[in-house]
Length: 114
Length: 110
Image 1 (cartoon, rainbow over the protein chains, first blue to last red):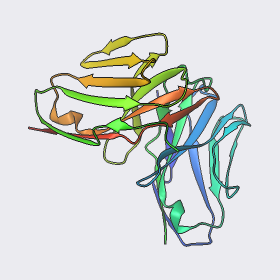
Image 2 (cartoon, rainbow over the protein chains, first blue to last red):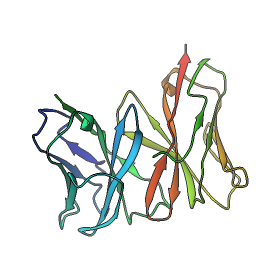
Image 3 (tube, each protein chain N blue to C red):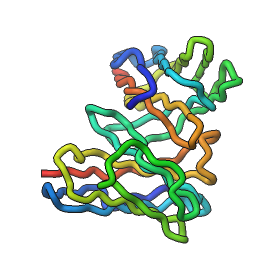
Image 4 (cartoon, rainbow over the protein chains, first blue to last red):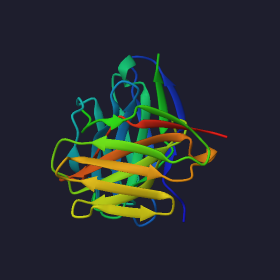
């Protein structure tokens, strides 16, 4: 079966712009989580969506937002980009979103803010 | 912020040798998971051990968990060049999120 698909793979944006990243989970999976990976802070949890509802949110400013559609595809948006938002953004898919089972990650979107 | 520390930060071994990575965490957990990441790509789930388990095996991988010491170790036996990657432990905490360690960079020389 198809894995988790993240688009685009690479993005270059200018400070102050906004960006939208997309994640298509494994077919049948209803939970999508987003993580940010930077050299300085490592992997940090952004938020989790389940059946179109945000169930959990990490400690990120309101510039980071997301949503999930009825087909479980998810998007995350970052507004007013800052240089520090440059990172690899990873999306994780799971059946019910429970940490009792492993997550399947996509290949990520590498965002560079200049 | 990260849950804990991984040790060592980097490890270089010869092909065929065993590699051991350690992970410590701070809070109560539901489970602990290990992931592999190749060259800044996506994470691949390797193995999950529940808080009531002490040891688990999967192929060449062996994971131990000591909840009293809040620590875990990942052993990769008979390492191969293809095992070269970054390895992360992640604790499954209540609230359905993973809290990752800083990772260990493993280099297996052929």
